[in-house]
Length: 130
Image 1 (cartoon, one colour):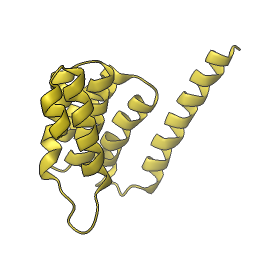
Image 2 (cartoon, one colour):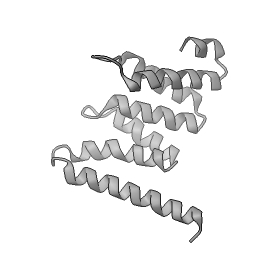
Image 3 (spheres, helix red, strand yellow):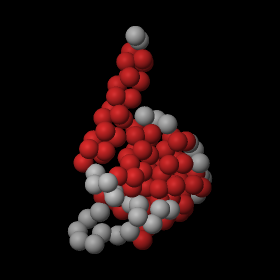
Image 4 (spheres, one colour):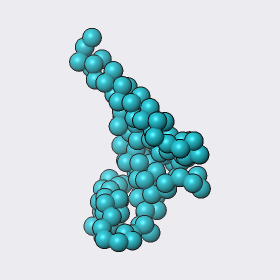
C-alpha cells in the first residue's frame, strides 16, 4: 500500500470507530440524533466536504438536532467548497448563539470564519466588521 492508501484506510478506520462508539454509548432514543451529529463531522474530517455540507445542513433543520454545531460544520464545508454565500449564511446564522455563561468557542470561531468567508467573497468592508 502507498502512503495515500494508508491514510485513507486510517481515516475510514477512525470514522468506523467514531460511529461505533456513538452506537455503543447512545441510548436507543438518542441514537439516530447522535449519529446525525457524527456523520457530518466524519465527512468533514475526511475532506468529503460536499457530503459534510449536505449532512450538516440537513441535521441543522432537525428539531432535536444540535443546530449550532451542524451549522458550524456546514459553514466550514461550504468555505472549503468555495461556496461563499452558503458559508456566510451558515456563520451568520450562528450570531444569535452567544454564550450563556462565559465564553463560547463556537460563537468566537464562527465570527472568525464569517470574516474569512466575507473576505473570500470580496466583501472586505463587512469582513473587517465581523
